[in-house]
Image (cartoon, rainbow over all chains, first blue to last red; front, top):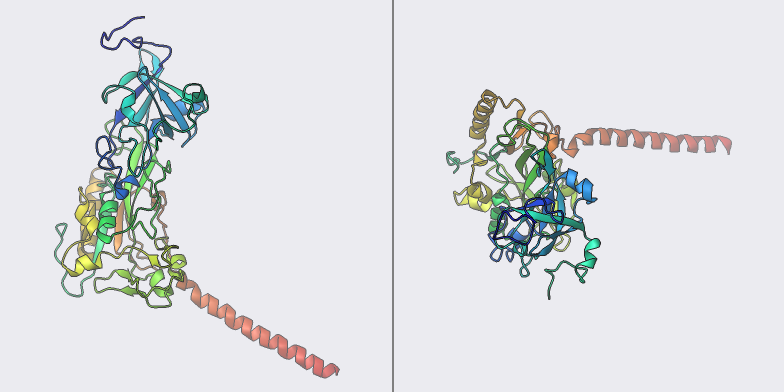
Length: 155
Length: 270
């Protein structure tokens, strides 16, 4: 158990077998920061209505995910569900001769508004690239979460 | 007005949408909806890249297309192997010869003094003849409301001496608005600049050689127009009228001849 980051002792670094992929986060043009001020505006909400996770076609093949299918993302800190956006724009890294896949997760969603989705910051304390993420198919996540719906859909 | 001169009386105005400048921000979509008070048309993730509005319709009069493609020099960032991601803002073409205008039986669709095609909502009866007549698939009927709607060319703003909302909102001046002839000249100059930069797949989309006789919303695109869901040779449906009448006349003559023949044969036999 090697910890190169003393401030993050929840996962081995590098090469934690539980978390093989890189997770990165970013803005979209259509929403504003955490989305509280843009998710309630219909003209912005319709432009980006749901949380999605961008994955490369290679990773999608590997885990057996198709476009628009639900995926669950797990980090040492939290779990979110999102729809998969399979795109060639997301490219795997070649690090020390190994291919490491990257997944992208915009951070604009929350529980309230015209459009809702899981809150991305469950996965880590603040927006940044993290080396700890793993993917499971939606149907396997039943062993982790009792609910069938994404955690964000609260009344 | 986007560096173009204010149109004099009788001068036709137009759009020039330069897709090489478009950043896919969708400000044009939002500005159009805000100005015209159009509702949002569905909160569904389509999965078609970042395009969740999918097409022009009764509640989308500006639509930004997102085209992910093979690596192209100049559109994938610094890495020449990066996939290209093109954006283009689609709109009603306000055709010189408009299929919708020709098809409208009530006279709801009219040509404005600015050269655009305007659908008067208080006259429209919802027959949707315009919907099938448009060679670009722009007009759509709102089933709840009953009437058809499309881009108004911001005729209300133009009457007040302003440019359309989309052109005003566009942060990169990708949507240029001005007098038609000025924009054609500007498009020529821009095409030369792009060719000098080595962008040999840049093309100017203004189908003057078809029955549409030219559009008032011209485009500068990279690659084929089909990539952006634009027909390379759009035609107005009225080009089939002559053939239609000819076959109708032929059928009428043939029918009369057949009836006459059978009558004469019956007379002969009885």
